Length: 417
Ligand code: ATP
Ligand code: MG
Image 1 (cartoon, rainbow, N blue to C red):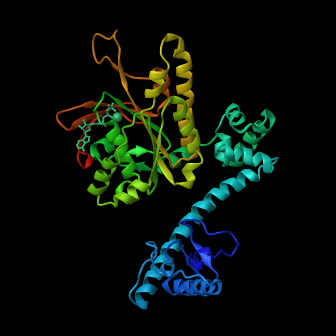
Image 2 (image 1 turned 180 degrees about the vertical axis):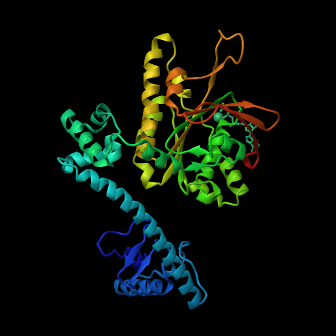
Image 3 (image 1 turned 135 degrees about the vertical axis):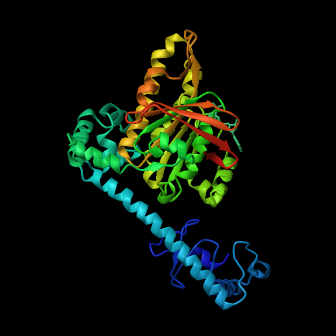
């Protein structure tokens, strides 16, 4: 093994896979496997010397057999390759540390709360309460249950966090200022965007419900791609988190949608964090765990496809109805709370429909989940099939949008007009 691979960084820690490390021999940064040729020669010569001293013949081992080590023809090429590599590493390190700074600032704020020692801080962070907002907006019972802290401590922490964040009465002007700056993600269809007041707004839970094949899953896929677009193109320069409860997430569809917009599909796929929920408990757990991912992974949109499929199949019979509705309610509030804690985050969920046997006139289809889901989602959009690839979207409930309809299409390229 070449010695260069064993060189430790300045702190004396061992080299970690895929992490840049600083080589004390040649005073440069390296990534694992990509080793500056000059350095390699140095390392090999060191190995040869060592092996000669040890009297071992390792000619074949000394050959450049490692596929990870690149061959370069001349010195200029090596230097160019190395400079490129160094730039790549530096930009990675910069991005990483920017994000890191953000997270550290939030944690620092929690640490500075009165009465928060090392043990309390660890408990809070472990349970996902890593910012003042996450403490201030969560009911005390949930903080207690998830962190294991006592009632008194929790109540005190919430009170101080609220004071620090200045949560209380505000003027409507402040709210208007906030609403004016609300960010939106394009759906890909101008008509559908217009119907939604300019696209999918952040800070809200938006529900798309409709029969099978009405395009719910297609819209979810499209939003995961579009959220990554630059702001001037209708995106948020952020990443997506996809909770799939039905097993219908298709990366190939993401590739089609990304390529239709001339995006590098590998990058687009890499920026989607995917979680398959196998049952309702798992689904609830995944959403609770996202609290720690949102800042770290720059998540700007969370998709849950579908919201209550698991609950419908697991809670069967009238006797379970109350528990089911309570559990869905608390799950929806977990999602709503994420929007409060991270105002630049949008949550989009899909929902199935059920037929009401007692409706003789008009549409017998209703969104599943009853009043709990109806009251929980901020904006509700009903989807139905049109001619061929056309679909019709109707806003059925929104605090600020008129009830209206828009026609959009599902094509190979994704959602369009
Ligand atoms: P369900 O309730 O069963 O989950 P859904 O509303 O999520 O249904 P989608 O999967 O979003 O339905 O939509 C499926 C429809 O999308 C297909 O029937 C087809 O019309 C369209 N579709 C899917 N993939 C493509 C594609 N590659 N090119 C064109 N249209 C497509
Ligand atoms: Mg679907």
